[in-house]
View 1 (cartoon, rainbow, N blue to C red):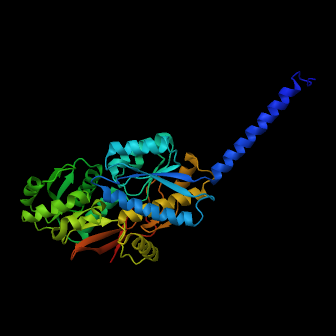
View 2 (cartoon, one colour):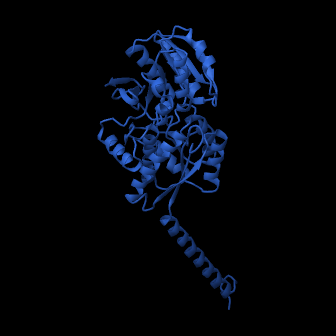
Length: 400
């Protein structure tokens, strides 16, 4: 018997059966997908000279992850973070991001802390339309890699300008020298912004020297700086170098304070530099003594888990994971473009590092920062800088 279109009835029955099986299989796959874990990637310096950054950031991410999953996850699904070590190297950062996307098929990526590593990973995320949020890369070029790249930290132009204003306007210092790492995008960018702002405020850069990542002897550069008329030495590098620079500076008789940016922030800073760092100070995203209730809650939980205070990287990692989960909850689906759009729509997100509103360039608008001083062998809160209410240009006001 045939149908009116001339096809065998058996073939039609078989086709319908196959179609039914296909729909059942698709439904099963959809059900599995809705109950499976949501995969999020993380890349950072778990080892290598910048390991303190990566490890602190990772601790913050995992603390937030555990809280999110304990609260039911996102859309009824738990989140799983897959971490890749970039070994503090840009080439390994690129490999780590490629692996997270091609092998693990993550829906979003958190990382990295070091700007050079984020600059290596960001173009790969952009070309694959996978949203990336860097917790701690402050170089402004990172988010310029594309509209899938975000950050939760302030940027170097904001940090460098504010630090220059603090030196010139609050400390009334007029002569600064600069020692920067020419192999670091972070160090070079921050030095440039500081120089430009400091000079515009009537300050003078009396001398400049440079070094490269991996150097251990800074005496030649410091000797060249010693003869200048500097009142303060600006070293926009990473904690791995700052301690030795401070020790060698004191050995050469340089007694002026050293100052730097958030790259100094690490539990190992004072461990390496010891007494040589007394009186030196740097800008950062967070301090454990901040009295805000959200910060106190975060610090207490972190101390309970790890036995020591969280650094700025841990706070930024925590905020980045929480912000991503918030965007996931709002998103209609977790495909790249939809998730990207929801991250971009973030407004007034209450993080432990401050309120985060994403600007049109995917950088937070007007984040607070703190100035920390090495005093009596520990970090002390020297000043807290809050953005002026309603300001869109990064203007700030100081509180003690």
